[in-house]
Image (tube, rainbow, N blue to C red):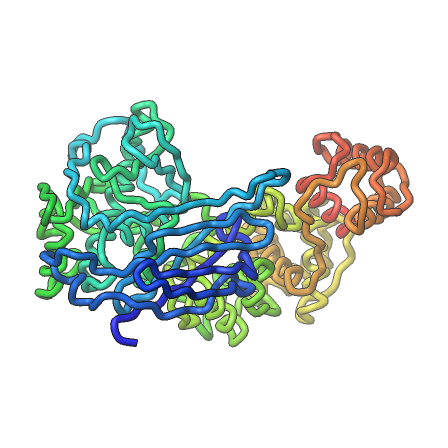
Length: 581
């Protein structure tokens, strides 16, 4: 189809932790009246559709007077969720656009069905209001100043001028940059121009965070979406796939002066209706067309600057190892990716299982990586580079955080001994390590099976040595941080794919609860009572006073809050203790 664009919807809840399957998306064109209906799959993704978009040349001409993109509206409905209406989805010629929508559960007991509404305003390049962001001196930033530069897991955006009474929204930082870039520039521009603009947008936001610009003034947010002060963030807008791909690759990179720590305050404006002393967004297009690199464009406007890397992404559980993982790669980083993908697939079943988790990047791992990349709009090359690593970590954090708020959870305590375990040691951590080794020995014959007695004797040392040799660790028979981490990752990989561990169901069990989960906990507690001072109960699937007393006794025995309620912590500890018996 000439002059057309691709539109996809990605629907989820819980910050991408749970895909919304079976949602009905009705897309309409205000200009032609065309109506298209889409259904989301098990990954929360709709099939792509082609829609009309004006010729690409219009979006490359700074003097063009009309809209260089077409507009579409959509209504999204799914059972159990509040309907959403999005107006003004912007489509550019020959570009793919993804509407990534977080759906909210439908409130219980409401007589009237409400709906979430998103009105996407025109692209920031078409705004005519003065952009004169207030910023600190580059050499002596005012306000409180951090002692390090890091990438925040989330950023809180105030939807209005700083002093205006407006809503605050907290969003993933990488998504924030994707939204700002999709709202302020055109995806049809040369890639070097797009990259230069995104570097400026990242640095602008990080400067606000580094200087604590708004918190130091008593505000409860990090940045606003008012272009008179900050950057153009638009709730609910569509994100262009090429911009999304670039942001995933570079969102930890920022602009600074050589020898400086702080992110540079990268003021910018569109360069046509609004001018400023910093970067001209339209000017980046002509520079890129004349062969300038992204850094060359930045230096054209900001002088002697460089691109720096912030390696610390707070709240993401693991950091990129510094090299790509692909077919043939081995080691702990591969084990981490395998284990995280296996965990993610509980929520996104289109990702195939990896079994066993062995630290070897084979065909199963490649297939799982490709499936993940397709779902989350990355290049499906089956290679884990920085962008894919960060996205896997991001989604892994999302699905496990959903567990903390009432979804599934990691089944065993992830706390590990601060020191080392060696021959002669005794106790709970020795018992846990022995349990890991015992399970692993059933899948890896190179590891000799052992008894679980909490005593680190010669047999346990031999099993540890077997494990270390098989997984490429220093074979000293001592469980230090590296060995413990590898033990944990290998065990969790087995547990994730074998169903060995029963995950927390996602809701509290308390007096009055009934069902299979209650019966399971009763059975576990009855077994545990054979060794610990816990009242013996009859498993009947009914959480009555006797079950509450047993739960309370268990909680007192193992140092938990004795409230007689089985939440995440109590469930995990009951499962762990039962497995160790």
